[in-house]
Length: 231
Figure 1 (cartoon, rainbow, N blue to C red):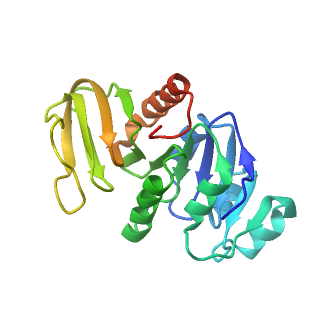
Figure 2 (figure 1 turned 180 degrees about the horizontal axis):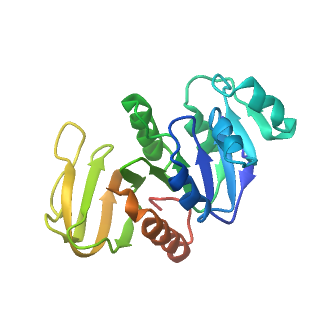
């Protein structure tokens, strides 16, 4: 288990070693106060002129040049192979919101592993950002206001029950589960309220909704007084 290395009162970014869109990075930096690198994500940070507060991982993908450029106290080598570098960062960092960039690229296995980590660490509220979509674990209650007609997908990471307002196809009374009913390609009809009664449900929205979703999740933290996405 990684020790707690950073506790921040403000949102932070976690940069992974996958594809990092420069425009998205600029948007993310406008929402956070600090940057943590997951292994090879440190190369992306230095290339963008950023000095990560921490670089965490098994260090199988960070370049020798970047490793030499980082102060030794910022390098935290975690040798265990039972978790991904993203999970190592989630364990080591506490913040009201984390924005993960560089984890949802071309490799489906990496994207699935990152989404699985969202469900494994519900006390670490995090938005994962891809080229087309963002996704995050839904807290017990969440209010959003995407444009009418926007796509909003719900994907269960286990058995899930809940209810909704503002969706073309309401979810009340439905039993969701992987390999069973899922909620992809729902449609926004008005202000959205999601209430998750049991289980871990991932919300998927167009990446244009990043800033609004970050604000909604931060508002939920303030209202609930908890960093746990399900507390």
